[in-house]
Length: 334
Ligand code: PBG
Image 1 (cartoon, rainbow, N blue to C red):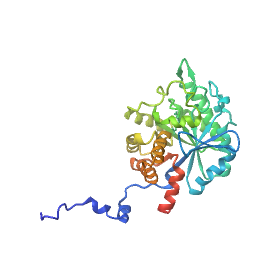
Image 2: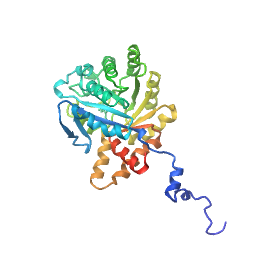
Image 3: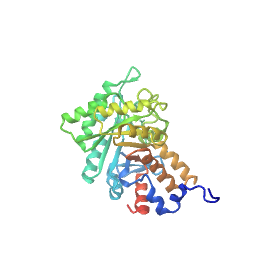
Image 4: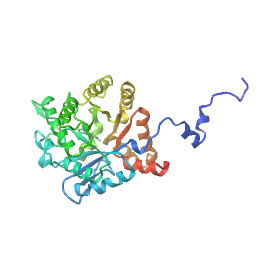
C-alpha cells in the first residue's frame, strides 16, 4: 500500500457536503410523525403557562380552537387531549370520568366540529378525575384492576361517542385493551382505533405533567404497582404482545428518550405501528438547558425527535410539535 493512499474506504466521503449527507440519510422526521399533546381547562378567556413546562399552555375551552388552529394549518395529523379537571369535581372513584358531558367530551366535540380532519387521541385513565390522583380505583390501599377496567371501558365509549378517533389507555391495568375493544365493537364503533400505552414505565419524568394537570400534589404514594419497573425490557415485549392480542392497533413506549432501546426492541419484534412519548420531564429538561443558553434550541429539539425515528418509532407525542413542524416547513420546505 502506497503512503498517503490509506485508508481506501473513507466513511467521511459521504459526509463531505450537505447534498451527499441528505442522499445517504437513513431516517427522516416529517410533520406526519408529530402528535401534539394539549391541555385545556374549564372557565373562559384564560391561558396559563405550566410553570415547569415553559411554553406549554393550558387554555380554557373557548380558546381551544384558536390554540389548535396553527397545528391544523401546519398539517400536524393528530392531537392528544388532556383535560385539567377542577379539584371540585374530583372524587374517590373518579365519577367525572364517565360523565358524557365532562370537559374531555366537550373538547372532543368542539375539536371534531372545527377540525374534522385532525385525528383526536383520547387519554383513558382515571387520574384526571380521582381525588387521590391514581389511574384506577383504590380498594384496601391497592389500585384494583378489574373494577377499574369497567370504568375505563365506559370512559372510552363516551370519548369515542364524543368524537375521539383513537382511544389511548394510559392506565396500565391488565386486560383493558380487550375489554375496551369489545365494548367499542358492541356499539358498532368498529373503526375507533386503540393506541395502547403498552410499555409505560413508573417514571420520574412525568412530574411536570402532573403539575400541568394539578394531580401531582394529590397523588398518594406512587404508581409502581401498575406502571412498569424501569429495570425491565423483556417485560415490555410481553405487555406489547398482550395488548396486540387484545386488539391494539398501535402501541406506545413511554417515556421516550431514556427508553429508545425499548422502542427498537418493540419495533424489531412486532413490526407494528409504534409510537414514543417524549414526556413532560424530557421537555422540561431540554427547555431548562435551552433557556440557560446551554443547548442550541432548534438543533437540540430536532435531534431529540429524529432519535425516535432512528429507534424505530412511527411517530412521537411531543410538546415541541408546533415548533418542530415550523422548523420542518422553513428548513426543509415541507
Ligand atoms: C396519566 C398520564 C400521565 C402522562 C400521560 N398520561 C402521567 C402519569 O401516568 O402519571 C404523562 C405525560 C407526560 O409526562 O408528559 N395516566
